[in-house]
Every structure is written in structure tokens, then in C-alpha cells.
Image 1 (cartoon, one colour):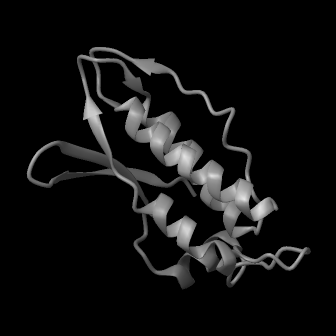
Image 2 (tube, one colour):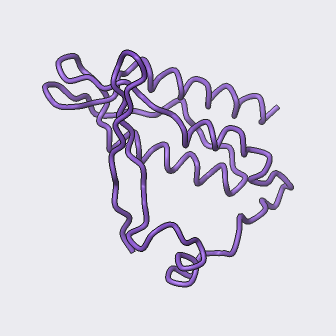
Length: 135
């Protein structure tokens, strides 16, 4: 079942923030989602003992991230960034430590895009977290 992206516009005394949020077309009922998709009832523990609960703080940080939007200056393609962040969250939920440092996104110009510095700051934070967890 395809997920639909909805856009949330937040203004917090200054810049405008845009962030796609993925919502299931049939609502937020997790039980319905599991029934329709056959998804597991809960997070699966990684074989090395590192489970999703260990990464819960970073998962929440990524999911709640918001980026300033730009139109005239170059920015990162919003859909590409959102898909990459979704893949990071999925990997962390599986108990994996994803490789973040090689991420590349298409540049936008004269259309909405995320401010590059905002995205880079979050990815640097995630990369430092993953590096520390590997030690």
C-alpha cells in the first residue's frame, strides 16, 4: 500500500519550516496497518543484541527534524532527503548502524528545497552517533 506524503508548514517566530510526514491512507491505526501489510507486530531485535530501543533517541531526533526551506538559493531535493531519512530510521529500527557520510542529494534552484546546512547538520549528528555506537 502506497503511503501519501502530507506537508506540514510550521512557523516559529522567523523562518518557515517544511517537513514531509508520511501518513498511511487508512489512518494511524497500527493494527490495521499490520493486518493489511503483514508487518511484524513490533520492532525486531537485531541478532547482535542491539535493538531498536537502543536507538530510540536518535530515531525520534530524525523523525522530528525540521529544515528551513529555500527557493532562490540552492537547496537539497526535499523528496530525496525525506526518503534517505526514512531509510535511516528503518535501519536504526532494525538495530543497524547505517552509513551516512556518503549521502548525496540533487540540488534545487527556483523551486522549494531544504537548506543544505540544516540537512548537513542533522546528517553530521547522525554520523557521529553511529560512529560512537560502533566503538
